[in-house]
Image 1: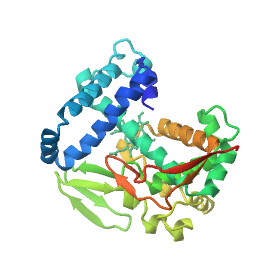
Image 2 (image 1 turned 60 degrees about the horizontal axis):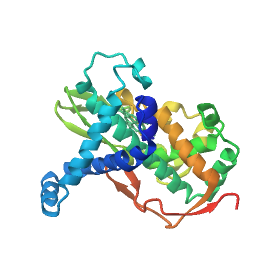
Image 3 (image 1 turned 120 degrees about the vertical axis):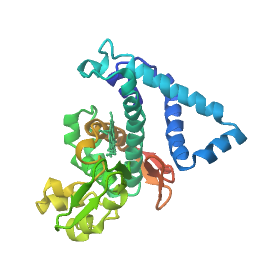
Image 4 (image 1 turned 30 degrees about the vertical axis):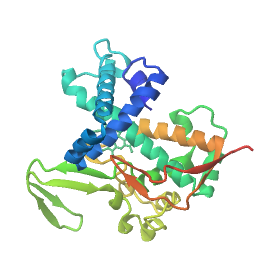
Length: 303
Ligand code: HEM
């Protein structure tokens, strides 16, 4: 993921080893640090002083900055996709966006792929359906991907049930009236902090439950999407917040789906995956991940 973003998207030329050994660990560390530093900044600083750790933080922070510099360095010559970027914004103004691109894209894609593998490792039936679709696919491009409807169903259901980003923080910049479909109104005063709880809204029984989709909202059931389609449910009524909604909708959706489809499809093509634990709970940092670390037994598919 990071290799594709840095080298293809931003036109850099970093070796796989440098990314794997230096920059990926730096991003993983900094993403965890962001959570710890938000929840308990003073305790974290104290713990670093007490047990050492300031050097590690500085080392990873410097690597993240360096990676941001590398991504930006292609801008003057229009390397990668920079050539298509028309903006007067200074490099300094773009830095935080580049960081979101690099760390956010890697974190969200990792979470999404690990959840999909985790669900499939507990669903031999859906694993077999995906295997039948991918066993003869050797090149993944967007057209091949459309020939794998079951894989797409699995990915859609994964993101609904176990969204990578599980809440969206917002702040009302003006007094705002919100109207519901049953004509109720609510005033949100300017300055109010709001958290949209994606995890629970995506599992709301009223919208995603048995009555509407044929399956309880809190279980992994990719077949619910066929039920809804057969009922003629409109696309707007099948919306969930896995990629966000509205003006801040994820611009990396298509790319992310392709990448996660590639990882999950390739894994299922090569291995039969079986979960070691019957269930796993979610662990939540910047994104959610299966708490058991996707502990699975692997067996070669064609053995
Ligand atoms: C496939 C896994 C991905 C998931 C589940 C995901 C999910 C999301 C979500 C839910 C948001 C909205 C956040 C909010 O409203 O506060 C978002 C925003 C964003 N995503 Fe993704 N994303 C993924 C992949 C990517 C990739 C691959 C890229 C870049 C190549 C990317 C770039 C972005 C950016 C730049 C934003 C901020 C958009 C804005 O604020 O206007 N994402 N993503």
